[in-house]
Amino acid sequence: MINRHDPDYHRATLTRRSDDDLAASILLALNYSRRTKQTSVSQGLIQMDCVALCYCPEGLWVASNTRKISDDDLETLRTFLCDQNIDIYVVVNGSGGMHAEMQLLKELLEVYTKGQIQELGLRMGVSKACCGRCADKLREYSISFTEEHDSPVVNWESPD
Image (tube, rainbow, N blue to C red; front, side, top):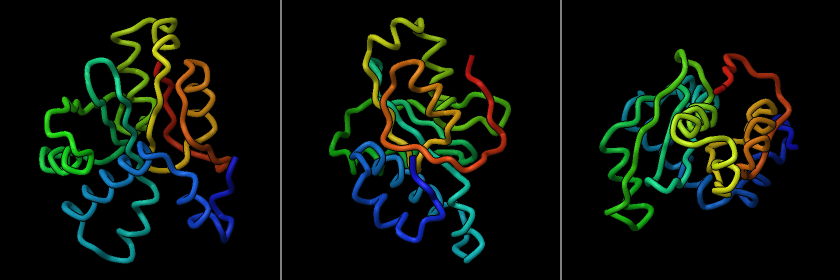
């Protein structure tokens, strides 16, 4: 568990991030730089947004809790991943505030049973540490992720 208010948080986080986490972070940064005027306020708000991605048998699934992911964002992600042929699917679920990780899990539950999800051994890349509720739900489905935080969150919707 990490403390996002720790003065060493950002430096320490960079050393723990997986390649999937970095890809999710890059997708969020690309989206912000293309769609949001760069101000100190907007830069502070990026901390409220999250992008998650998961390699599934059908391809790479991506979701954002508040941002609309564009085709340009996906093309740049393909370039970053060095795979122009990868199928990328943008997943949108929930009532507008569902955490990105839970949007992906909800989509997985539309396609697979809980047992099938657990057998897939999926890994989720997330642009920031998962909240405790998302982390608990991902563990329930045997989906691995890098880290979680213990800060209170709002707008949490269960995927099931």
